Amino acid sequence: MLKTLRFVSFLFTALALAVALAHALELPNKITLSREDYLTVQQIYRGWALLGIIEIAALLSTLALAFKVSRDPKVFGLTLSALLCIAAALAVFFLFTYPANQQTANWTRLPGNWADLRKQWEYSHATRAGLFLIALNLQILTVLRRNE
Image 1 (cartoon, one colour):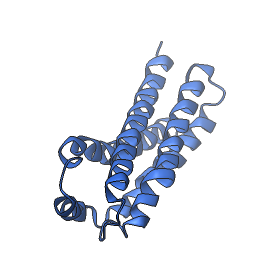
Image 2 (cartoon, rainbow, N blue to C red):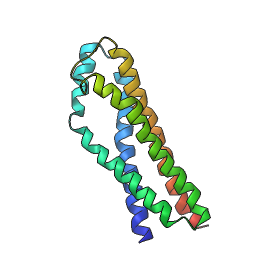
Image 3 (cartoon, rainbow, N blue to C red):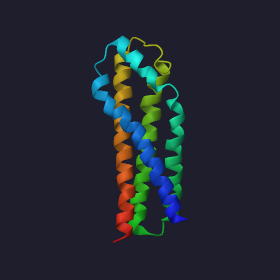
Image 4 (cartoon, rainbow, N blue to C red):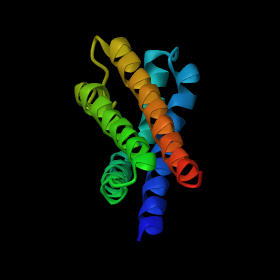
């Protein structure tokens, strides 16, 4: 059961990282686009809201994993830290990314402060990519620590 739970947790964290990293890697090319070009490019994300399921699955599976390893001090702290990174990535989404999505009707219209919202949206995704990367590395370290 532990191996299966660990696999599921790692898999969903890696998938969440992949989505967030896609946004982060696009940032340098998108941050200077014109108003019209940015609005056009943002349309590629239609339907991506469903990918939030992956992040919830990463959170819940890592939470379950933390409970499962709670008696193993070698890995519990790392697992808990990974869980906190995943939770922080979700918090960043709801505090910064989602409000930008709401103010732009999911990037179908651009209000007067669109450039500020673009920065907020782009940098929040970059922050989330960093948090998921840290979480996945912490999860990998749990396996390495366990095998010491």
